[in-house]
Length: 362
Image 1 (cartoon, helix red, strand yellow):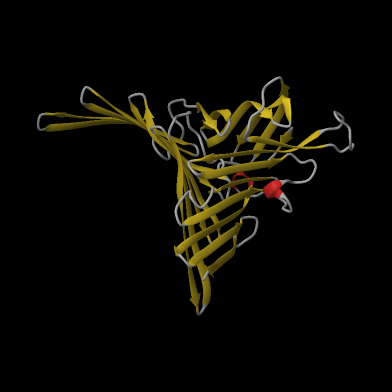
Image 2 (image 1 turned 90 degrees about the horizontal axis):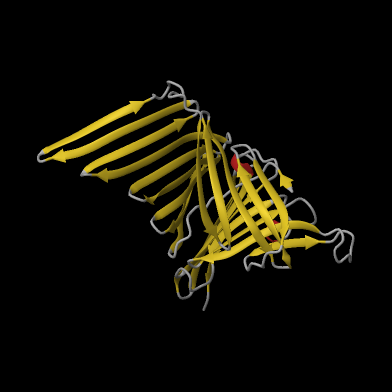
């Protein structure tokens, strides 16, 4: 089935791109400040959400900035070691205009005591590549650099595009990822998972492809058969005909749930038939992703819950439409402080609600 347009990752996307490894952690921060001026009455808000996924020598991060006027900035970064090379990548996107801002790729290594660096910078219609080398001979330190292309000079070097591929394990699924860029910037990012087993139908499985562009998202689900069941992939079925064992059975939604380092990850996608289940019930949204603490023993005296929702035909980057976040901290044995914030990016101003509360137990 195909559904266009739609989201992300990440929070999606967001969220997790890495090779399978023995050690992995999911961490982050949510920093929000609100300033209220009573005369004349004004309200300003800045909220920064950072989610880091570390696996092996790699760290993948999502950085989101929201102001009282709406979703202001979105950045995805990756840093790590690939063989003998140190690699870093930063992708900046413009949420308000659902557009690409900047992509920078850095790689460096040391050969025979000489440090070599390559920096690739791509802006819309603009490309620059910089090569540099630094070495020391006794008291003499030398640096050489060459730059190809220039900001404002257009895409040089007969460059057409780039494609980066990788694979990783997310919860119970093996995922292949392909990032494509052209001279205008970010083209698309696609995730493909094959052979996802359906617990309710152990002889059936699904192949899923999820693709993002700045303005749209496409989800394609194709059924296959003869693979075993998996413990974290959930399929919501309905029978419009009523009572037919193998009659007009439809797949209403698919969900993915797992726990990484004490942090719960849950994603649900509604395919347009039947009723919206789980987090989507009673909402106009077709997809949602949530991360939260898995229990009181997970992360100390506090807990958090962050959920992002996506609207079919939304006006913002990846069709992300609504965000709600809650934080609770136990400051002392009898006292607990609570706060939450909501953003509705389909309205202006996007800052929809801020709540403060506390609980005293004696």
